[in-house]
Length: 517
Image (cartoon, rainbow, N blue to C red; front, side, top):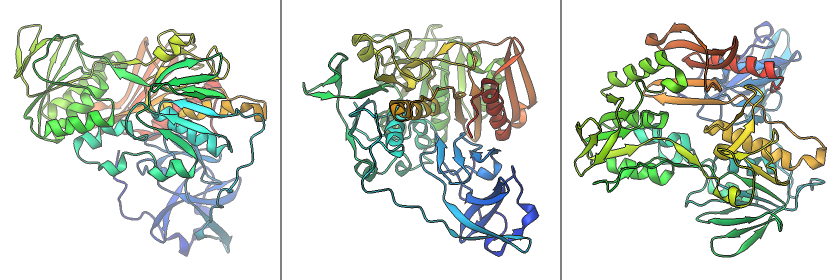
């Protein structure tokens, strides 16, 4: 996505800039005492905030100002320009702010604005649930817990995770971390102290066996129970496994931190890998293994990689990009057998392999909800507020199937940013009794996929379309692709056109009346 460790940009703002250079709706980026700082105006008043997004260091000066907010060009986090407050994920932290002074036709940035310490004792939220239990420590679960505390909730929160690791940055597992260009220090979403400081009970290696909706209670794997006032189901998804009996060597799947670690270890003693599945995850794994010097062949049943999601032209572009980096493809093919030295295709061809990875999709973990009698239809059915058919039980992330205002359809989306934003909305709706109003989830879906030094950003949701408009040159890594249905824009994919992606997202929000200010 770029290099956040660049030299300091622009002028030294402690020496001032002309007042006429600081314009409403535009960003001026400079630096103060070694920190990149963004200047703009809100209602005529000069404001100064950090110029780097807390999520991967995206350059906010290249983002989009909407009212009194700034949106990150890389992954579409949003912040208040007045307070630096994070308004929506994937960023999980706020921006620093600086004091400014305007005098004699110049704007000068002064010291950093101090942030008041949170009160030692939170004021109770009237009408809030007696306790919140969150099943699932992924994107939706951790953001929900964090949001509850940010909104002033002072009662017990339990975050229950089946796996052994505290919440971590799952998208990185197939990208820079797997490629060896990101250290493991980047992976946790919060330091261990965060959960203690926020009084969030984090239960790892803990299975939930049953939800008792009548008693508002869950039953854990060890037989103990937990009462809840409100429950959030954020159990995520599980990789679909290959239907190949008795493979002669291990088949790797990539979903968890443990999976990524195991794949890294296996790659260090491997020379030839076969990736089964030309999906986003499969292709990102292919790119990361090539970065480690492993020969890679990608096998998939489709004629073009990613054609179903992005169309034929982008599919050809993605294939060419991978082939330029040494990946070979066997498309229109599936595996029929795996032995100790090769993957055997249905055509009879043997592909030598000492490492096999399958990325053939995931299935939502809906069993708990189904057994509890919640509404199910290819996911957990929720309303526009992310509440299930049982009052006080919400669902978010890969399991949630919600009515989408942008498409007019009920959809389920398996993307990290969507899951985080649903966790934020669900948490606010849990506390809605305090304000008497609830927040509709109508965010435009967004995801990104990284292939070598090329990133594809995608906003919207298009399961089908009747027209594609291509603006720019894919071969030059400078392009925007718009997907239309009945004359209406339903999605946009971009390659190195971040402002176009942000503007497309904003246009879809405005059409649905859901602009974030």
